[in-house]
Image (tube, rainbow, N blue to C red; front, side, top):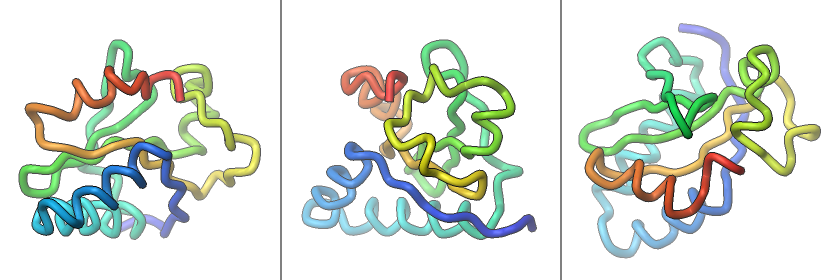
Length: 119
């Protein structure tokens, strides 16, 4: 297990969690458990995404996938343009930025429809 991280939640992620708490408590719970697990430093099982989602990672908990970026890796690998985080300068290297979550069948459509690859 690695070191612990600080969270930064994107607008879409916050909107999703608030909406999902009301509609599907199990999905919201799985997303929260995934976030907590990652914040404890458990990045080894997260998978790198490619193509328009380059610079982001995905972690699966149950049926839910959580898409995020590790700010230190983002800077070292020059992925700032791909992730386009507005608050990049204010996030420390120990920050995990959470973009969105969803079922495998929907997560990439969610990211594309909200143009998350641009921040």
